[in-house]
Length: 78
Image 1 (cartoon, rainbow, N blue to C red):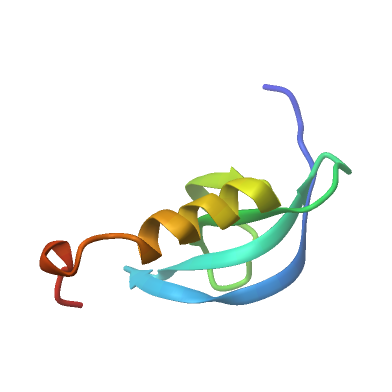
Image 2: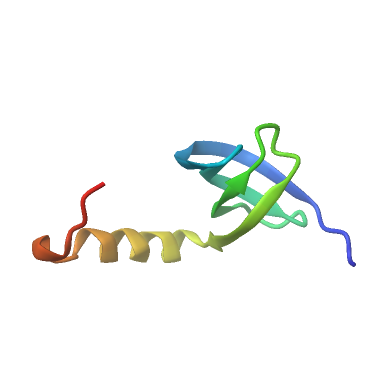
């Protein structure tokens, strides 16, 4: 398996908890590339991670637009 590098450049917040892992929104640089918005589960010390998704600035803006444009009747209770 090829090695990869990552660096959490900015911790933006915890979205939720899943067992001992927390689901977080961070800015992460993968393999020395520019940081992207990253949503995934992390161990408490950030040494292990689960599957996730990384988004560019434009993709994150579109995600926020889609979320904000949802119909009131389609909202879910949190």
